[in-house]
Structures are given as structure tokens and as C-alpha cells.
Length: 144
Image (cartoon, rainbow, N blue to C red; front, side, top):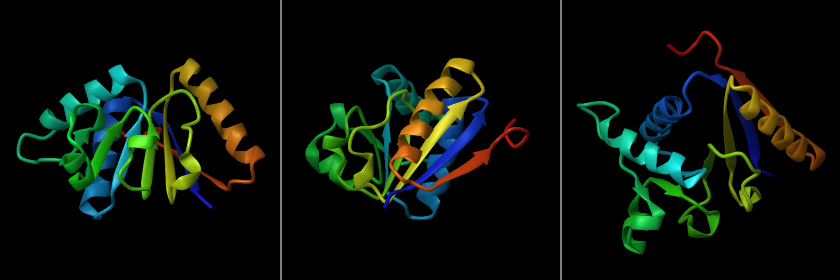
């Protein structure tokens, strides 16, 4: 069964996602990131400029060849059908990602914005109603 974790109170969804992806990459994890198209485009650009002396290898499935997607440890994907692996899924979007149950782990990134928190509560209820054990990580005070 998929391990579900909510990371609450991220001050900046894109910045936190970059740090989370850097950490996952350093551990050798393969990650798929899903969310709204505009958010994924912003994340793509930010991953290229996040740290001047550090490269976080990634690609956007919508604009990459199948070979590049298959070789990339971090894949930004509008839909999970284009995901080349099923290890870790990071959801930056509002809806429950269709097909999340095929992944080993799901990480939900939630800001302090009230609308984002309301969407997160709906997703939490969706997972809990289906018997998923949910871990909660409060980021308040941990991020700058």
C-alpha cells in the first residue's frame, strides 16, 4: 500500500519542492512530480536556477523524448500515465492524483494558504477513507 505523507506549511511550494527533490536525488530516489501545468513549468525553470553550483537532473515529460523521460531520475508530469517509474510521487496540485496508488510513496506539499489547506483536507479525507496511513510533517519554523 502506498505510503502517504503530507508536508504542511511550506512557505513556498516551488522552493520547498526544489529542496525536497534535491534531497530525494541525493538519496538515489526516482521521483515523479505532478501538478498544474503552469506550476510544473515554473518548477522546471527553478530547478535549472535553484543552486548555481548544483544540478538537479530532471525533465518535463510533456516536452521530452521517451528516452530522456526514461533516463531522468526526476520527471515533471501533467498526468501519471507518462510516468516512467512508480517509486515516489510528489503532488503539488489540488486534486488527488489519478493513479497515485501505483506508487510506493506519495508526498503532498501544502502551503499555509487557506485554499491550499482546504484542498489538502479533501485529499487527506480521500486517502483516510480508503485506509491509507498518513504521516504528517509540519514545516512551520523549519523553512526560511
